[in-house]
Image 1: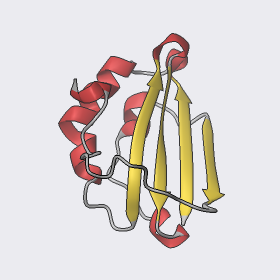
Image 2: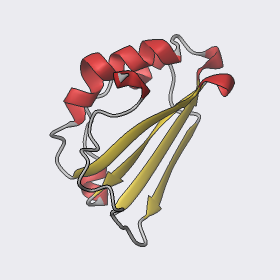
Image 3: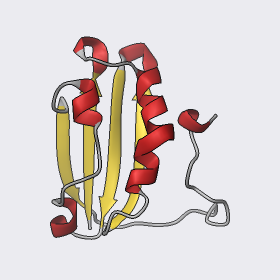
Length: 109
């Protein structure tokens, strides 16, 4: 398994966190639902520091290297300031597996 982390500083970008939340709600979450090999994706933000990013959990490096249905780079206007990949050493599922994890977070409030 492979974990990928991408982070942008939006201070010098073409968009805002609020605009990116709309993009998640209206387009991106749906587009990622059926991506082969993607086990988990979470988008995150920090408004005080104007940062935006995502973490991906992939079944394999080969699947992580496929073209993704994302317009984030286009909307933000640049490549991520941080882009890192890590081998996954271990995983667990917490006690909340009964709850649905999809479509939660600020973009859906």
